[in-house]
Length: 125
Image 1 (tube, rainbow, N blue to C red):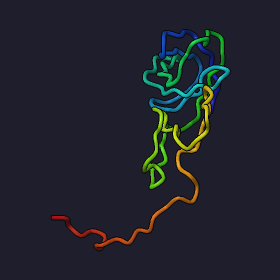
Image 2: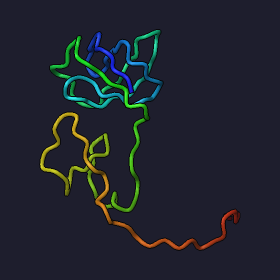
Image 3: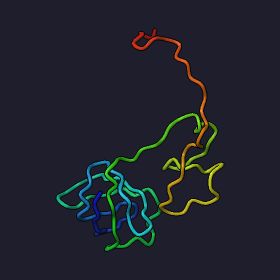
Image 4: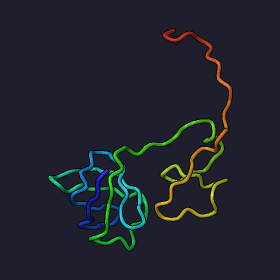
């Protein structure tokens, strides 16, 4: 993880200098730590697609690389749920989701039994 500084904000696209991130890395942008993803790198400047409203974000604010890509936890807990674009639960979750707020996608403990019906390596027809 490394820190950088916002150079420019153009809608959901933010240019960050000195972040040292890789392509498709998850980045936290601004004081609110808005989630975004590196979509371009030119020298020491990374272009980040931010996935939340960038209103109020300004040059000079910090940005931080996370060292990992954007990931989503998948499983039976997704069935019947309503989610936003960052896979944060909108139904059955918190009443409001603040900017930059991470929220658990899957309820802990929700699972279903699984017994494979075929051996590993069996060809499906």
